[in-house]
Length: 364
Ligand code: ATP
Ligand code: MG
Image (cartoon, rainbow, N blue to C red; front, side):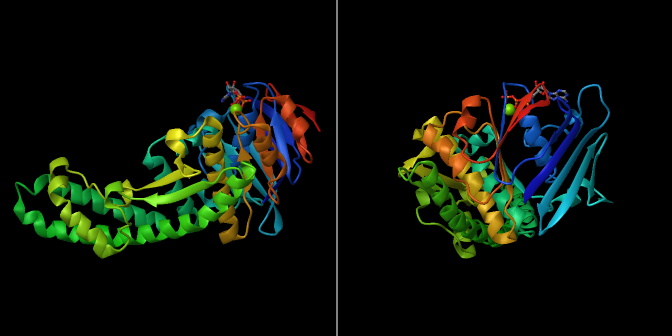
């Protein structure tokens, strides 16, 4: 995927802007609150996803205006294409001149991955962030996965409901068996997807992290279940056994204490927990490596290389890590935002855009 031209109208603080990026690295720089992230966000919306800032569509329209427009000329799936996104009451999308029945029909047409400072939660926060990362990444590549997760979660909810009632209604025990059986069956399939994805992702992330740290540090990713249980329970029978064994304690809390909905990915740097002991720069590097690894996986499966949108990735990184991002990410089109104008001095090949007050000020 390569963005050839981006044109924005009445989007956030941008009244009108036209950008023709290069095929490799594009650096968007400027002072705080000038519209750098807004520019990346406008590209991201062309993927058909919601804003990565969790904003409602309506809030994307420039104050006092009625409609925001984004036009993206891009090269993807071996041809030149055009995506037009209009936001007023609803989001409307045209692909190559044809109006799509709904905005989410454009999913999968223009591919991008985004890294923003909020993604640091991948490293810093609890397991649910990492599970969501894994589930979203797999869901993009395997269409069946999302419905599998829904069925699994339903089984968990049903088991929990019965656990709360079974003391007063012992006749529910039979139903409990049935839900535990489907929980274990769906659980096995989810684990299968997750473990095989993580195994491949690990290699991509290792290469990227090693590049970022000039080979000085090694990242480790490991799928973990309940720490006390030691070896992974992957098979339906194993899961079922744990569920049956934990019935009594689960009844006390009315929750299911074991299963894919409780699992985690342990991220280490040189064998030490990145979450607990990583420095700011190491944590940022880990989150970035995970996101870029996700992009490599998309390339492997769909043969299309997503555009990388890296928002404010440079802060807290030393010169050698910045150099890797600016000069060593090969074969991808990358958009990087930063505040420090000195950053562009280290860019060997690429284009730079200075943004001021929602307008393109200098282009080089
Ligand atoms: P930073 O370096 O601090 O991250 P930035 O250049 O990335 O800054 P943006 O997040 O792109 O800044 O936002 C620029 C400005 O856009 C903000 O000052 C914000 O008030 C403004 N803004 C956001 N939404 C709207 C909107 N709907 N209409 C007009 N202006 C908006
Ligand atoms: Mg910003």
